[in-house]
Image (cartoon, rainbow, N blue to C red; front, side, top):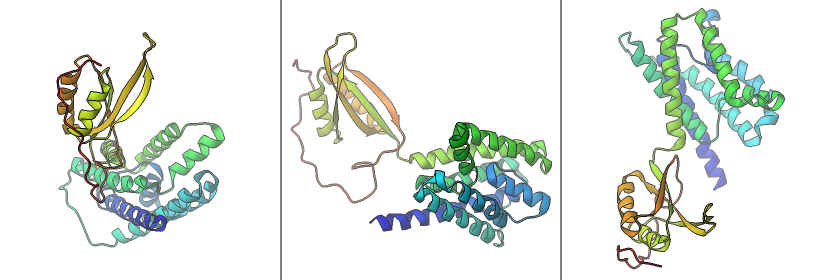
Length: 300
């Protein structure tokens, strides 16, 4: 099972790098858009020295991977090597495919498509714990050696590379590159966090048993009890935690209001949910129904 999971991860990394490379070749290169990170450096080398990004990606990343092997961990180290090789192969492949996507010189469309393709591809790679090397390794080394956080070092490196890109693109193309970078970051987050929209419910009520029974019976959602204590009253509280889909929120708010109008309800965003009722897989076994309850609040 573990071996099968690893094979799936490697295939997904290859698919992600293929989509990323396609976007880079079809939209960035063909429309003279820059890029941040090590990929941006390879585009600078392409513009100034005519070095193929498929080769410069390997030339730059392999030494970085070997240098940062100690800070990556064995699994990430292996996945990073595979991701770097897969990216180089796909860059080489897509440059030789006679495919041209015409956007009628509309740089906005080109930037949006570049961000979309790159974001989906990179998101697939990151989702299984893979990387394509580059600035991630530099950031981890700096974090360990100097204490500089990864977020700051990644941002600093991207700014430097984008400023250097002005040697071969003008300010107009740079602004469209920033649009592509924004779309890229949003799409990566979307792919990583999952496409299933879910909400977490935290409910504090003296009628927690009645509310929990209705959530399990009527909504068919699992419920967890958390133990808490009121800061002012010092009284013990039983807190309900439940994860539901966004479309169920309105019905649950009505359900709680009917059972306890004084209940405290907090609704939080849940970026990804794994488990019965949310993940793909075999259908769950039929759940034994609990007896329906009278929605009229009852005193404990």
